[in-house]
Length: 193
Image (cartoon, rainbow, N blue to C red; front, side):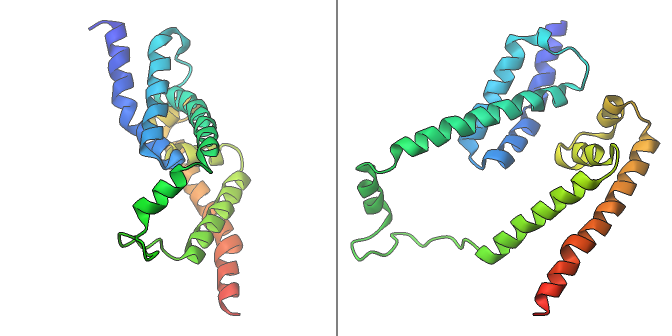
């Protein structure tokens, strides 16, 4: 097997992880697929751009982040140009019966207050991660958000597996304390009113 074929296989093996990441960011499977395809195409067109200074997955996620931003910009323009057309009447006819009720039973969208609380929780979590000292925040995000495996993280940061687990343990303890102070105590205080 040539180096080029091996490179192509490695990239293709990472496609599911990239797609998962893109879907989380875009919440639209078609847009996510487009962004991942653009990412893989960019990586395959210029394999010399991968200098090997990081893991291939890390490098591809870096490319994907730019493609996601491009996809968001592209689709926000498309959405803004399609509003206010005759298609709105067609859409109304498709979705609503003549009596004004939905043609099909709608899915339960959940409780908006719960969704707002979840968004607020994520803001507090992000603030807590930013407060982590040294490399702890970066390690935590690499492990839990980017889902990199331990070997990749150790190689990327030039640390031992033992050091990684100690730092992750400390990060989780600090996050627990921060969330306890910034979220759970506030939530229980708010619930008392």
